[in-house]
Image (cartoon, rainbow, N blue to C red; front, side, top):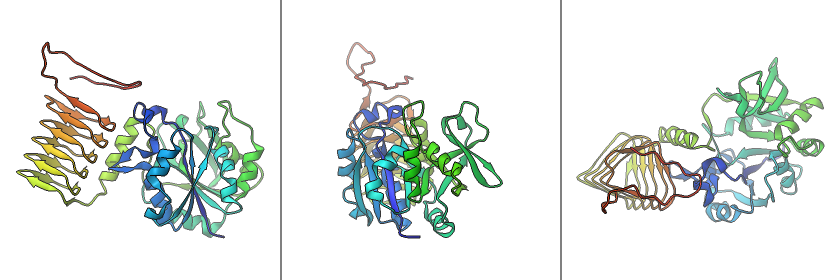
Length: 357
């Protein structure tokens, strides 16, 4: 098999993560202080795939280009491919055809996280040379995903978000294809939601007698499209970190696996890992609980934060209760207002959610 190329889809609008994604691409929301997109790029690089195309949307493409650059920081070459409208994963494949040419390729959804990377999967694809290799994992809510039905270990049917799923095997956001998938994508028609579904293209391959191999994922996989999924992914990644303290601790302590990045300063504070404190953050008279990622330049004073993600520049101060299971965007400020009369005062964007003690 000739050298594989990579295709990362990073064009979605992220409606389920608003208001964060009103101002930032969903693939750049950080997990453990690293943009979700970078995990996919690193997985490609580790698997030896050094020529990678990234599908981008007009609204967020420039931001993604600025973040990932030309790929040299990852040891690969990145090419950006504009998809004018979100018309489906199979449409994205067709949009990328000039880049992919006649190369086999790995397609990776840019807002997905897969434990253990894709090295073993790429090796299996190279060894058995099917027309397609799809990743599957059991899920409790298969009606929310593309679902596969197997017979004697072979894929026989794929359905996108079935109302009455026959199995609990959902398609994970990583696929491997030979160039025949381009013909399949051209042969199908848009679904009821107006998209060219990759499940329909794979079903076309099955119907035409092409070999489609399933691979059951044994580790965890996360689609980070919702708040609860972001927090779960953050928790899973933080569980793998190795502690290191490169910042300054003044009358403070860290327990367990905690990363304190350079320039961070902790005064009279306690951090219980796993947790990560970003570069230049300032923590004063506070407690940071497990599974928390504090972005660079954040400031936390006289407050408790646990199981949360704070993006760069956010400020949390003077809270009577503990803030938990929260995702704060960049430069958000949460604190107690001491002016009279005492009242709640908010400036909140569209699609926000606030829970009050």
